[in-house]
Amino acid sequence: MSSQHDSQQNRTPLNPAKWLGFWILHSWIATVGVAVAVCLLTFSTRFLTTRAMRMYLLWPPYYSFGALTQIKLRSRRNFFRSPFGELRVMNTKFSNRWFFRSVLCLTVSLSALAQQPKPPAPPQSHALSGLERYRNSRIAIFMNDFGELSRYRDANAALKPPAPGENRVVFFGDSITDMWNLTELFPGKPYINRGIGGQTTPQMLVRFREDVINLQPKVVVILAGTNDIAGNTGPMTLDQIEANYTSLAELAAANQIRVVFSSVLPVHNYTPQSQELFAQRPPAKILELNRWLKGYCAAHGCIYLDYFSAMVDDKGFLKKDLAEDGLHPNPAGYKIMAPLAEAAITQALSPASH
Image (cartoon, rainbow, N blue to C red):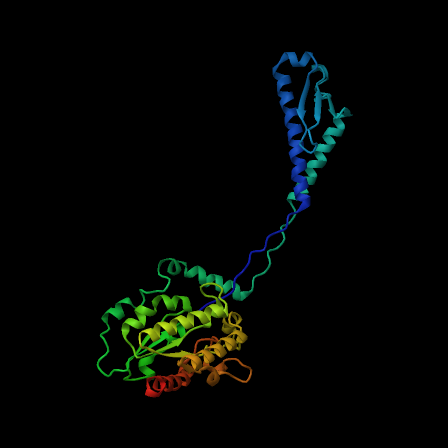
């Protein structure tokens, strides 16, 4: 399971010096271009070398109606000494020496502007880069099979309807459920695992009919939310997560399936491999979502399965010895979870809970 946050791209502010440099360059390119054209005409046309030529062109548009720039050629014998003749701008005479010095200064200035180092990109947090890597690796799935219905399609087709009196239970969730060996911890129980690593509640809603309702269980144990907080499929608010929990509960109730909502597990940052997953899952959000879940269950007749209280340490984090990566329970963690889940299932199946 990898994870969250919406990153906004930072725009580099407009550099006024560069803008001014490019504008000046535009002006000078127009002037130099005309001068080069006149030179070419001088070499190719005898007429131009024996008579003075006047050429007019509009100066760049920083005057409201334009200004007239005049270049007057000298005779051919003086051409190489003073190739561009006299340059007049708004009836002001400029010497060739001034012209070449200006071009040289302009070239040096623009070179300096072009060589200015780009400002360094703002550093991204390690958590954000990990989230982006995860999302990039899932693009094909998000585009072609968002709910990952293909994961259990064959297994669902091969599963027979429940036998009379069978108390079938579906464990439905993300990688914490996916990694859980139900056969080992619930031997002989008709419990079916339908967890998929990395999933969020929007994805679970997509596959809830195929992976839960159509299997005709009496109880569904839902463990979700941690990847929503992390943002595996995009940024999500707690209101959006809660709305998806509500939809799951209403779909189950409409099909006479009892709902057990598991608390979101705590996380820790006690190991190097736990830093990234912890950063994506603020403990305050986990606490707030669990408070809402508990209240929703009490108000709507669902069972609240409190893993959190049994696995949290005195700092409010997941106990270090229950998960190496700070998120996914190890065998010791699942041994704590199993009897809690069994007690919640028993409560959901009891007539008093109906």
